Structure formats: structure tokens, C-alpha cells
Length: 118
Image 1 (cartoon, rainbow, N blue to C red):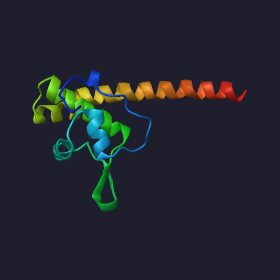
Image 2 (image 1 turned 90 degrees about the vertical axis):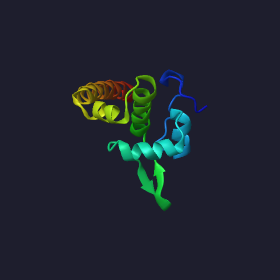
Image 3 (image 1 turned 180 degrees about the vertical axis):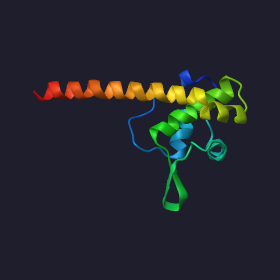
Image 4 (image 1 turned 180 degrees about the horizontal axis):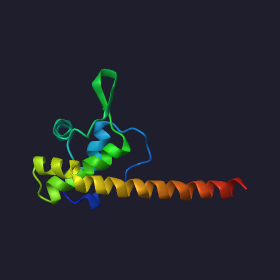
């Protein structure tokens, strides 16, 4: 399961709030020690730490790990290049587009909720 195939071959992310490092390892096709290393290399990757320093990743962390994995394993970026890509202007544009999509979906869901309440 931990091959370096494309992200399209990865399993769907379940509808959960938090994921353990083992679950993220399976969801992203990356071994746990690699995830811990990437936390040091990518400042934006900050899982919540609880009891005994156990890591709990959220959905946005899983998505970021998949993006990092794609940059490194599929697109051939170095760690430094991937970090710059994630932090650069392109990332800001992509984040802006993502935020617009989220706002649009939220508005549509609120409209559906209004209809269901009638």
C-alpha cells in the first residue's frame, strides 16, 4: 500500500475530524517517519499534538501531505522547491480559489438547508 504511485490511486479521505499518523500514512501512501520529517521541513504542516505527544492530523493536513507527496514524488521537486511552491504566490492564488469554492459550496448548502426547513 505504501508505494509511490499517483495521488489518484490513493484512498478517499473519510469524513472524520482527526486522523492518527498511522491512518494518514495509509491515506497518503507515505511512511510515518517520512510524515514526521516533513513536519520539520514544511512549517505549514502542524498536526495537533495531544496525550504523550501523539499527533492528530486534520483533513487540511491530509490534503497538504498529498500535495507535498505529489510535488516530491510525481513532479520531481526538491524539498526546498516544494516548500517554496507551497509558500509562494502560486499557493496564495490556489488558496484564494479554494476559499472562493468553499464559500460558494457553503452558500449552496445553506440554500438547501433553507429549502429543507420549509
